[in-house]
Structures are given as C-alpha cells and as structure tokens.
Length: 350
Image (cartoon, rainbow, N blue to C red; front, side, top):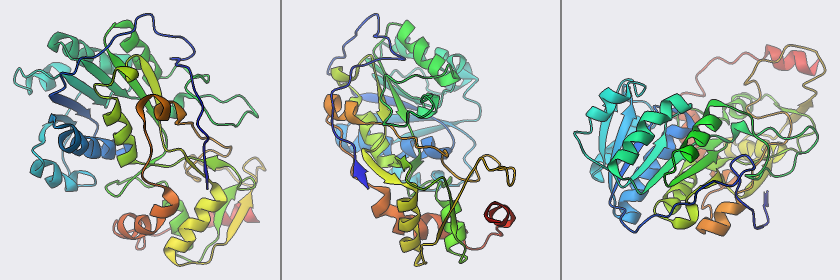
C-alpha cells in the first residue's frame, strides 16, 4: 500500500476558477443534511451528523429520503437519536416543496446536500439555503465524472477532465448561484454501516475456496475510503473560508493495488490468497457491469488538495479494515449463505 505525496494543487471546477469568491462567517450553529437512502453516500450522512454534533457543537437536522426500511445504515440511527440529531423522513425528495415544508419554517446556517444528482434536484434546495441566508452549501457529488485520458493512469486531481454528468451540472449550478459553496467528489466508499459492498466479489470467492479474478496484471491502484473519513473532510470544510468556491476529491490518500486488496481480503477471511488474472478484452465471455467491482484500469484520486487547504488526514485504511469488514459487513449481512454462480469465472479462465 502506498500513500500519495503531498503537492499544491490549484482549484478548478472543470478547469475554471470561480467568477466570484465568497467567504463564510463564524456563525455555524445549525446544519441541514439532505440525505439519500443508501449506497456509499448513505453512510457518509450517518458519520457526518455525529461529527457535526460532537466535534462542532452544531444542531443537526437530516431531511432523509425514505422510507426507512431498517436496513444499514438506518438500523444504526439510534446513535443519531441519542446524539440529539433530528431525522425527518421524506418519501420523495424530488417533491422539494413538500419536503421543505416538513422543516417547519426552520433555517440553517449550513446545508450539506448528500442527495442531489442533477441541477433540477439541487436547485430548489440551494434556493432555500439562499433564502435562509445560509453561510455554506456543501454538495457531495461524485468522482465518477472524471475521464482520464487513455493510457494516462496517474493520480486524478481536481483539475483533470470531467464529463458533463448530472452531478457535474449540479456543481456548475451552485457556482452560478453566487453563494458560498464547496463540492466533494467521493470515490469507492466503504464502512461498517453500509449495505453495499465493493469487497463482496472478493469474499464470495475466498470464502468458498475459489480464486479471486482480477483484470489485467493486478498492479492497478485504487483508493477505497472509509465513510467516516469522507465525512471528516466535509466537516473540516464547513465554516472554513479555505473551502469556499472549491472542489475536493473526497477520498483517502492511501493507495492499494487490486492484488494487494485481494490478499488483504484473503487474510481477513482466513483463506489462501489465490489470484487469477484475466484479460477483460479477450472476448472469452460477455462480462456484465459489476462483475469486478472496480474499473479494469487504474482509477484513483489525489486528496492532496484537502490536505493542503483543510488539514485533512484520513484515519482509516482498507488494508487494516478488511478483517472487520469480512466479519461485520459480509458475514453479518448473510454473505456466507447466498448462492454464488461461478460459471463466468470458469469461462474467463478456460
């Protein structure tokens, strides 16, 4: 496992500096988290709410996409109740008028949007924040918008090329609204309260005595980030003038190769580390999306900008966390009991 070296990075929202730079005051007392219902982003909201309460002394309200089905991370929300976090469940966050009405006329000094995926989604909530006089609007976007040039597989910085995705357009809309904003682009999130698992394909095979299939030669680097570290970066930005008008890769600085990740999973599962490499372009079989949980090529971001401007430093690494991830995520959620079809594995290795 490697750690990216620090370097000074200039801001660019797709290569352009913002037309207007805004600052924030010290008044950061109440935060609204607009929260999606699951996936990696789902656990970020859980950790962020606790951090804002316990570390910044803020009053936190979550406007939550529902319904609550009692699945991870929602089955851990007793922690939020105990910390004094108010959670308001709203079945359809796209019905912004109805959801905002549920807030009962309350205003917030900071808003963290951990839900929107398009300019249409974000516009009414950003407008509400302007109406409240909010000091900061943080938007948790996605690193999936990056489009590395063919053969250029170094660390992705915030100035690298992006495609015009819905989340990218939402970022642009925030910049146009001339309000204090910050955008975060997370990549490959994991955590103890998560339902989704990027490591399940590794554990599916290791727990059943099968080799782990890895595309290429297995030397490709990836960054997997603990949701608590994602949340810590966002929390460090709230009320921080260094963050205003900026976009940050919301990720760890620790790198791990696909082969190293497979070996860490094997150690966690108490299994032999048997890795078989395959050529994803050999045409032996049609490979569906998600068969391997990451891209075939290296795809990892640099978190140096957050280190430089926010003083961010991750506290977790997937190499250290693989053991509890196998026990508390994979096994606890029934991974050992499910039926797994290995016919595609056999076709690729034939």
